[in-house]
Structure formats: C-alpha cells, structure tokens
Amino acid sequence: MKLTTKEVLIWFKILDITYHDQLNLFKMMIQSDQFHSGWSLNDLQRLIQCHPLKNINQKRFNTSIDNDKYHGIQELAQRSLMIGEGDYPLNWLHLPQPPLLIFYHGDLSILKMPLISMIGTRNISAYGKEMTYELAKAFSDNKIGIVSGLALGVDQIAHETALQNDGRTIAIIPNGFHHSYPKKNASLQKKMMKDQLVLSEYLPTQNVRKHQFIMRNRLVAGLTPVTLVIEAAQKSGSLITANYAIQFNRELFVLPGQINHPQAKGCNQLIYHGATPIISIEQTMIDVAEILTKRSSF
Image 1: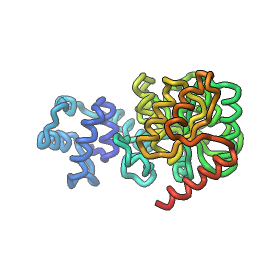
Image 2: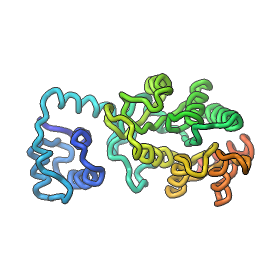
Image 3: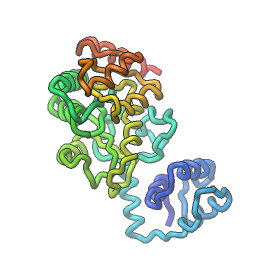
Image 4: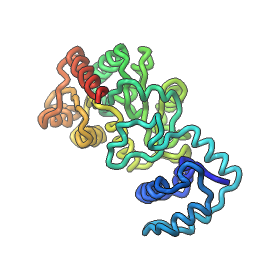
C-alpha cells in the first residue's frame, strides 16, 4: 500500500502532527525521489530516521493503515488541495504559515475570479446591515466574488446577498464539514457546499476550537487583495483579520461609523491609522476594481 504525498499530509492530520512538523516533513518529502511515486509506511519511517525531528514521536508512524482508513484517506484527497497544486490559491503561498492542505466542497472555479473579503461584527446595526447588503450586491453585480467566514452578522449577510443576486461567494470555516458554527448557519453552509465554495483546514470531524477562529481569519485576509471591514468593536476578531490584511500587504477598506457607537470604534481606529474609508458604494467599486486590475497583472 502506497500513499500519494497529498494522502500522506492527510494522514499527518489524522495523527495530529503539528503544523511545524508537517512542514518540515513535507520539505523533506519534496527533496526525495519518491515525491511523485508514492510512499509506503516503511518509506516514511526511513525518511524520519534519516532526518530526525525533535518533536516527532516515531512510534506514531508505526500505526498501521487498514483498508477502511486507506479508502477514507483517498476520499478526503479527492476533496482537498495540496500546496503547489494548480487550483491552490497563489495568494496563500506568501503567507507566513500557508496551509499545506485545504479541504473543500463546491466549485473551485470561484477561486479564479476577482475576489474581495468582507468581514465585520456579529452584532451588526441596521446601518451596517444596509451597507453590507449594498456593497455585496454591487460586488455580485460586477462579477466580483465575496470571501467571508460564515459567521453571523456581516459574514452571513454578505454570503446571502451574493446568493440572492446571482453572485459567487466563498466561506472559510473554523471547523470540519461535519459541523457548523454557528449552528444557525447550518443550512447556509450546506447550500454553499453545494452551489458555491466552502474551505476548511480541518478534518471533517473536527469541531470548532477557540484558536481555529484566528487561523481561519488569516486565510480570509490572505486569499484576496482587498478586505472590507463593515463594523468592528475595539477588541474583535474582525480587527485580527484586518491586522492580518495589513501584515500581508492587502488593501483595507473600512466603513466609518458614529464615534460613540461601540461597533464603530474599531473601524474608526483603522481609518485613523490609514485604512481607506468607504465614502460611497460607487467610489469603493471604482477603487476596488482598479486594485483588482493591478493585482491581476502581477
């Protein structure tokens, strides 16, 4: 029994090997003549013995893979992208910690579209709802795909608006496909897995954990050249995503808000520190279209 390199990465996830160790093992595999011919468990054990890693417990690799587990790994491989494959997002290659493997359900062709990310608070105001809808509709009308995190509030409205207006949208979720977070969006996730695109770094059975939200946020910010923040409190996950966008040299557009509104304080701070304010739907569309055109020519 031999595993492809992608199947080996899936097996590493099943063994719960850390990202750092997965990356080091993957680098060693790339340099091997067997990278394209496949790997037996003995091959992997020899590889680790020749290149001992401090944090790897070699006993883990003595685990056998029976036929049921092998077929399960094969099925997961058919629904995943490995770093370096043709459909793997090029923008992620420049991240400090790019996913080695990403699982998906839906239409991968959406990844080839012009894309922007829309993020913001779960506790959205009436004004925030209106602006999220108007912006998402304008992007959908102009054939620009919308990336978000399938949370309540801004994320949900952005995804649903794209669906209502014949647009295209991508959700990046902080859990495996057998779970939904929040549960209120289970039907939306199911629909997007069928008609749009849902991405996850996690095995299907993995439930949500606190640190996975931050890991998800880096992928939302890193996937597109432009991130829009609709409403965000001073301490929120949206600001974490916005900071990732800044770190990754992405353009940041932010909706201004009332200075005494708690959900606007984070946004107003971002504008104060140099983010582009959203002053109108029309101007934002012009500015975003110009950025997407320039980035696509690189």
